[in-house]
Image 1: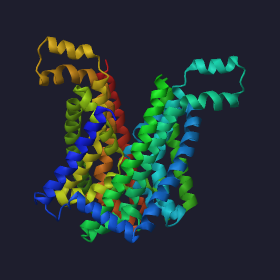
Image 2: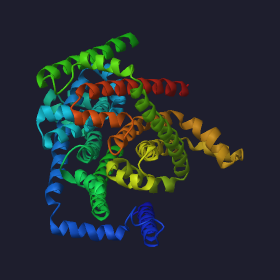
Image 3: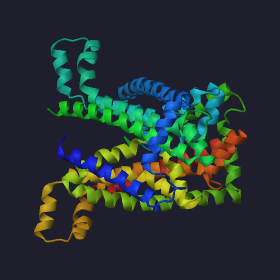
Image 4: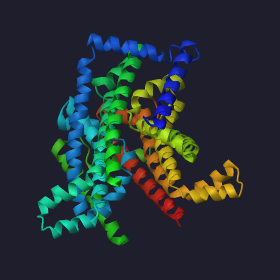
Length: 249
Length: 244
């Protein structure tokens, strides 16, 4: 590991240690926050008992489905917008301010359109994440060096093989950044929808535990969500950095 | 070119309206209010004093969160960005904080700040501050080293360096960060109001959702979208002037 990675580990460990200490000494009251070590103990107990397995599977399943839809739809939409510059000029200002519209408010509409269950939650996650994928696709297509296309023409490659063998690999690192963002936003969309609106999944269980003053369970589930999202992000970031580094060579 | 652009944007708006009307026909009267119904409802709500009370509550929380988030985010970005090591250490942590579902932390915020406006403000700050820190930090990293060297030659204090050298140099990137932070702060405040709040636009939305009142939902959606798009355009103009 590089020195900055060691320091980072140290900073995070010191932060968690400080919270543990503040909780143990009673500076942070037990009613506000339980010590991190107890969160881990409680989480292990919950995972062992299997009471949350259905909710965990539902949440992660929704994230996977939503991500797949976002990546495919966002990529296709990005291609279409890139192909029509007039469309792009008029859509881009809207894309830039897209995130301030709280997509969650369209939940009732989705319930009527898709029924109760996972589908409206997935729809909200897709709505939240798709712009990131579209933007990344546009960016990737913009950054393909023209010389690559010219070389392909010299080699008399067909349009399809140029797209698959030259353009797609050249845009791949930028597309992957889009995938990474799509995963993060799908997690946010799914868990926030469950938290505010739905009656199942990890997000709902956290809100339910909060409303019933079950702090131990609430913090254990929070830890589960934060730890798994962090893990997924770390893996994706590592791949992303490798791809970017290869691009720079 | 600009006229073409305006025509294009107008065309996109018209297309969205047509899709909206189409969905209304498809989903039925009770599922989604039509554009006309929404406009009528919005006009009626505008005449209602109670509604402006909710708007004032949300605006107050939003402005507070935005001011705190901007000042704190940019300051933290400058502090972390000046040293190469500290920005390398901080960046992955910040990016992870940016991409975790912060709504899971909302109960913690409520337990710390209590039910009320300060919890909403804190939640808005949590959403908006991090992108501003990341943008500021990266802008400083990409700043020409000669600027910092000159400020050292002139023996400026760290505060003078930050205010008269660093901040003007990174202003365009800072504006991009503020634009993203602006949107996310609004989102944070609204999510905060949707869960465990009795006042504000977020509360109105949750209330309307429970009542199945899609006219109110769509009216607030239109109002928020119009506000967000206008404010974003304003920030783009401001940022463009900073670039001169």
